[in-house]
Image: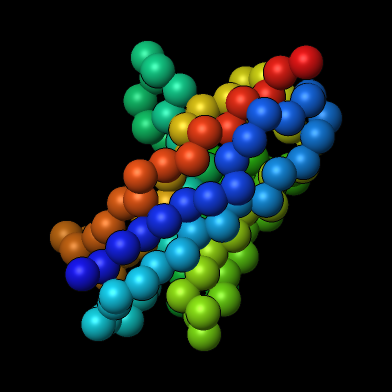
Length: 116
């Protein structure tokens, strides 16, 4: 059974940093892309950053220059380093693991709250 588990969410002050982790277990396929999304109700879920199997990255405008996505293919892990956090970064952050366009998995999410 495939599991995608995020961790690292917390309450942090504006200007602070957090590192989120995404762990994949039970896979029997090659992972194509790993990505971080976030959702702050009532907004729709939005892509924050993504990384392909060969390391190509793409960021949302809101994350560019502040967030860094990385992955360890040997450990089936992805990370999101978030610096210079702002209150508007407050959201539940989800990891999405993509095998093909029609075959993907979501984690359960981890809460990030940026507040003084």
